[in-house]
Length: 332
Image (cartoon, rainbow, N blue to C red; front, side):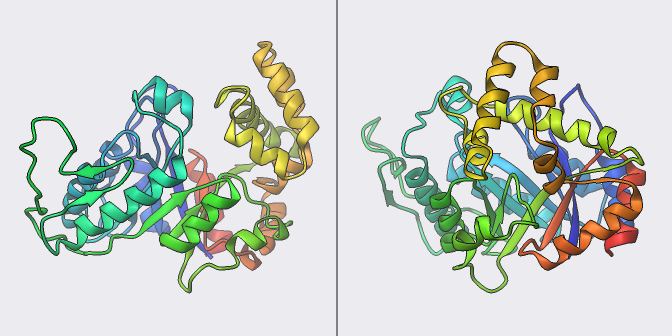
């Protein structure tokens, strides 16, 4: 079992992740992941961290593919990987229709098809075997129409590694299956090591060396009820508000995990502006299973289930350096 730190994105204004990332490197953490929604971007903080560290891997979790073409990411990945001496881990995903169409102005339908084209084109660009041409439904190189002057091109600089690890952020069964087929790892949103059967079929075809890096909220508190509160508020926000009511991937995942009535109730309360009640409606059992919360001794005991699971890296979701130190003591 490896440990990582999920730095996330800026929730309440600018924060400097460097001191915590430096401490994680000293503690033996394997990777730090940043994130993006429609505020702070995923690459800038990662570069800042990379400039102040020397060993810890640098992960995007996740980079939204609607924001950047495969060519843009090939250039960015090549650059960061050289500057960091081969530490980049590229986590990608599609986000949801509200962000894709409302913020990026891109069409959302057929996301699996788009992802498959995206990774195919990115891999070809990074191999740098020659000028790239591509004829897909979502990407064409050179572009059809336009001026008619488009020219097949090849990445100017040779990548440090022609195979940068790429993980897929996926929640649905078909998307997870594609992660196992085409990617080097999977970034789940919610995972319960106490119910490995839920994802068993989806990840049964994974290749040797396939990484599963799972975000896990860590909150050390002798009062278990209080320790669960941040997890429940986070779940209420994602189930209730991170997506349209009729098209919320996070809520759909929770329904598939056996909490259909609870997810419906959380959405209903959240859209009514009753956020405290929405958080209270999150089942304690579910919040507890996907996190590491409570007294130190309890977290130590519950780590056993994570170590026996298919998860290869726990991405600790916390800004508390003492919690990161305690987790390292217990897990490493």
